Length: 427
Image (cartoon, rainbow, N blue to C red):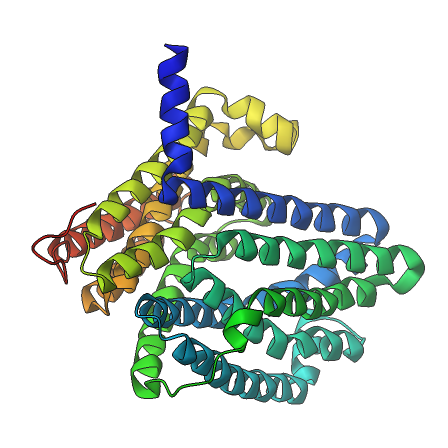
């Protein structure tokens, strides 16, 4: 039996999908731990008011992550296409073209934010305008980084990509917390973000030295822009889906109940983000299989299997040991949410599979049914929450919305399972 288990594990480790998912899962976990330590130490060395200022500003910055995700996904798609045919000159052309355009976009947004800074600072009740100036100086760089990480992802250089992801979190933690300890307060924590972007950019570019040595070739800009716009809408709808319930809870509930729901949401998001690396790996592998006329649907099946194993296991743990988990993370003050934990986790499990599904579908081609599924999910969530306005009602709305989106995306994926597959394709 031991030999059989060892043989099974050995097979998994030598299968490129499972091996690369393991690499990226490890990298994302290390990155998340470093980000958690950043929050923990910032809370320890800053006053409560300073801590509130720092993370309200960081939350504002994270709004623009939809742009970063769009850039990464678009670059990954076309890098995979060009590298599959050996057109590395076009990969370099892609890098140069995206670098120019996203740098301009980042600078324009940065200037716009500076012009609006009096209103932003007043809304957040922050007096120091330098915080905003320094924080959003990193915005153009945060748009550049996903370009180069997207190339690594498209080339399936997952060890390099993992090191790039970890380096960003490590530099943010060491630089930001170090500056806070040395007395720079909120500004030090913010400056850590800028240092992280600069450091991770340098490291990531070093991994692409061979690609940058190629002679640049022209790429199909209109097709890339069309794909990028569609991808942005898909990612925006998905982002709304997993953030909307917390916003609505804050609107409908008392501060105490809204706080309890926020705690539930944080625990639930563990299930959503734990298998997040699966989508990162599935996308370029399915895209490569599609470009070569191979059976790309089996890549999706493997990805969903991994997510179901991770997220499903977490849901079972939430159902069996809710009080223990809540005490471990929050203490006894949030035990009132223990009965809801596995239900909310179920909704997040569906959403984690939705993530894999739309990554797979985007890797094949633009499918308007993909976007419709996510918009439908948002609509169901809004309608359900608005109708019930209760704690359990919001949770049920989240489950229903994510299940509806999952069902439509499964149908979409099933309909595209033979798309571009050659007659003699084999795995």
